[in-house]
Amino acid sequence: MYLLKKKLLVIEDELDLATLIKKYLEREHCQVELCRNGHSAMSLFERFQPDFLLLDLMLPDRNGLDILQEIRKTSTIPVIIISAKETEVDRIVGLKLGADDYLTKPFSIKELIVRIETIFRRMETFTSNTSAQAVLKFHDYEINLLSREIKKDNTPIQLTTKEYDLFVFLLQHPRQVFSKAQLYEQVWGINEYGDMNTVTIHVQKIREKLGSLHEITTIRGIGYRFDGAVV
Image (cartoon, rainbow, N blue to C red):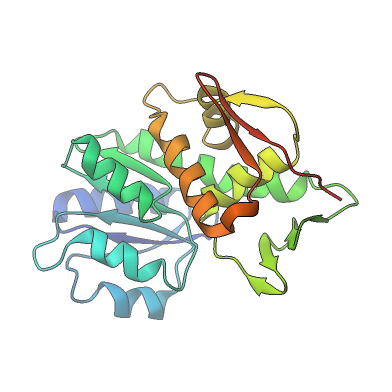
């Protein structure tokens, strides 16, 4: 249901894996385009205008992280990195550049589908659960819960899908302390492969983009708390 008619772009040079992913996604009634090199990636991305991106890091002609960085200049669509690189450094760099999730090869296609569905489901949930107060304000920031937009003095702030979901969750629960595990469960969903560094990195990126008035307090040894006054 959550993948119905969604447009997904798969940038992956391994033909067998790319074809298998495409086959399973099309069973979920997605529209899927494949790209097997970095040279064509950006032109296809701009032409296809996908709702979701699966991105391999180890492409034959270009680093996938460079593609992610370029995409994040103009787009906040959800991105899952799929890579044979297993080091924590690669995972952290990918998340810092704006990936929503990171899946190490080899992986289960069914798990991949579940992760994609979870991201779309939570995007819809964050929108459908909005109250009559569809706009939240604190300091000079305005958060429109229906359009998923954040502005400061009418200037848009570009948060990725998970940065936005994490920030709005904290915003809607002011003065409450949440552990990293609790935040991961609420924003990414329960997953035995969950990496708590994901939460830390997303909080760092939110702070960088919102500046000194982010109002997210680190509770040492526990997690995070939003201390701002929301109206």
